[in-house]
Length: 266
Image (cartoon, rainbow, N blue to C red; front, side, top):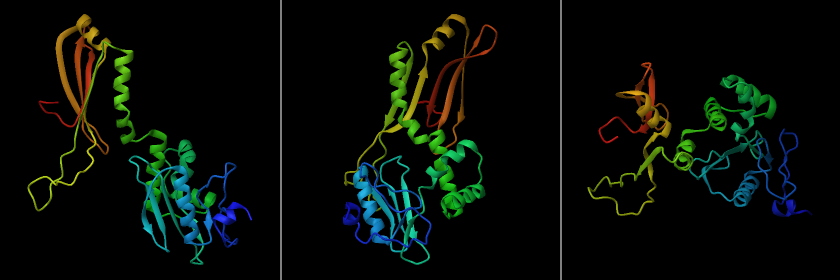
């Protein structure tokens, strides 16, 4: 009897269903993949528990029933999510999510792939059925995988500012943070005394490269214009730019900033 049988006794499933049998890799690590099938919900839960302990991250179970198990990673910005539910026999369990990872290569070839095409590919390649809402979420995750997402890019801003200061020391790069407001109880006017972790929130960033300043002083007319445009996306805000006029009456960039809104302080 190998350790697979010791750790998961009775790990037998109905071989008439299409799917991949759970296995350990060469390093004896637990593997979870789309399409894996398990004899019952208990076997799946045991695998899931061992996988998260091995990988070193925590999960929250959104659904933990015999009819379905759905869980996601609790870490901010982590896209990991898994969903499994029984097959027609009502007992055999099958992993039916982690869909986005399977479609990333397809989106590289066709960035404008529609939901109907996604469903055909999932059915043909992996035998996966998905609702339109699941397909929509998978499409969004694929785009984030290929293009990045707003949250992870904002996290990189402090590093970007430090790199500007290090490689272009005469430039001006400033980033401001603030704390979120303290929650107030609905029944009280005083702040809730329960301690809540306070994480700094991005407020604004201002950048003016040395070449911009030097170009303005050496070759531009004494005129400065400021304007802004509203940013789309989950965090909105305003992109403000400052321009001057060069000797040919062309626009010359002088500085840029991303702020919450156009106001005197910003």
